[in-house]
Amino acid sequence: MPGTVIPPVPHRPPVAPTQEALEYADLAIIDLAKAETAEGRAELAVQLRGALSTHGFFYVINHGYTQAQNERIFDIADLPFTHFSEEEKREYAAKIVEGGSFQGFKARGFWVLSSLCTIDAGVRDQLEHYNINHDITRKQHPEVLRPLLPEIEAFITFNHVEILHKLLRLYAIGLEIPEDTFINQHNYSAPSYSIDFHYPRSEDDETKTKNTWLKGHTDIGSVTILWSQPVSALQIMSPDGKWRWIRHIENALVVNSGDAMEYLSGGFYKATIHRVVQPPPDQRGLTRLGVFYFAMTDDDVRLIPHAESPVLQRHGIVRRVPDASAPTMEAYRKGRTSSYGLIELQKKGNGVEEEIVAGIVVKHYH
Image (cartoon, rainbow, N blue to C red):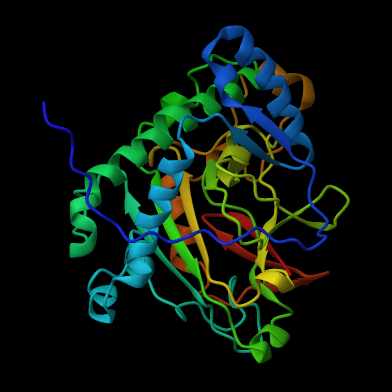
């Protein structure tokens, strides 16, 4: 059988990691190769539970992709920002407001004054992203991506089955519930693969926004998988209330829980506050290319705690809303997406701002 011909893609050489003396968060490193055995999963579940009860973020290594495969994915991810025409960006624009969906292209400057992402002072965002559902046939894609859709689809499947499923088993073991509990709530109807491109801003805009590109926030879904890249900009709020940087580790993943997982776990697995800021001095002026896999439960899953968990019965359950009022994933997803970066947030003091989504108070942080 002849070998598969891989379409050529321009190579985007990765930049050098920063050499600045940054204060990094001390995150756990989960070796996913250990997840192949029951003993390994038990060990990793304890490690994961510790990571989620402290920083809320962790690294994953030995996930199954080689460095060469990693670089190929970033080369493909670069195409929407370097090879889409302005006409294509408009034609394939996501229906963010009318459909509550990020699927498609989001242009720079979409988010407005005082919203989640534009910080304040009338500065528009400098973030573009292109989002693809796991069902790559659900929407049409620009011509440059069409020969690459089989690779993109395989990458999405890899994230969902080989990474997300293994992590969801560890989340369940940590709550002492059946290993497939969370997997059964993630039947591939909502997750998405997303790539984004942060452009540098003028020094005047950086001053106005205090060098913040994306305000402190929590993610919408259950688990976010970020493929580590060398331009430092991501920070998390540590348990002591201090912002610390996320270190780049070659061919590693940076993973965190989102709101949906916090609700499903009764507050046991907290969604960690994080933000994006201007890169350090030796990386100023660089564009930042990101590759993400945002996992969410099936749309019809109601975001109520797994009260059957012996762990939650021992530790107690923290509910954001009564179970009877809890939204479905679909209602919460559409509510947050359609308002994201487009509404005035209510200032509550100490840098905290709030909005109400599907009956739940959602906080953002300066």
